[in-house]
Length: 176
Image 1 (cartoon, rainbow, N blue to C red):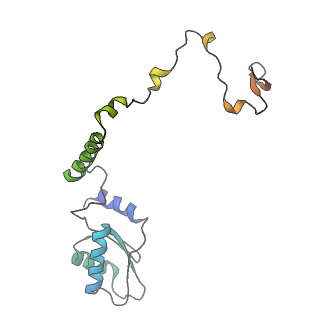
Image 2 (spheres, rainbow, N blue to C red; image 1 turned 45 degrees about the horizontal axis):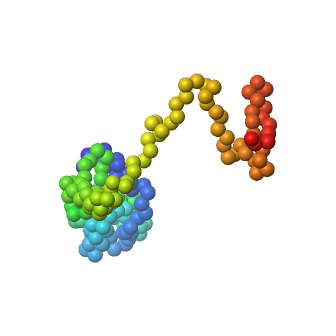
């Protein structure tokens, strides 16, 4: 694991709550199996070490990582963060990393299925969304342009707001 990967995992670990608590009994085989199951389900877990645990937290983290075949991301205070990559179902993708081929094939297969679900007659009737650049009206001069009236400029009683450019004031006139 590179330092960039570790930094990325530290950022993700900030937002998760501890999944397991390590207490007076310290590392038991049951706790190691529970940590392994949690790592298989989530890939990244945070463990809280209670105050009544007398063992060194750094040593506990290294031992737990060794027994669960995971990696220690960080140990801060009484919190341990472990990471173990799941080979079958990858949940955490590092920045700049590509998904495995299996994942990409599934996405392209789904897109192909969606396209083939439509009948050929339906595809002909599908219209492309309007292109704003080509749909805009072009004006030869400024005199051809008419000011548009927004809904917010029109009152319920039929008066519209107009502006006097010289004085910078506005007034409501009867809508034409």
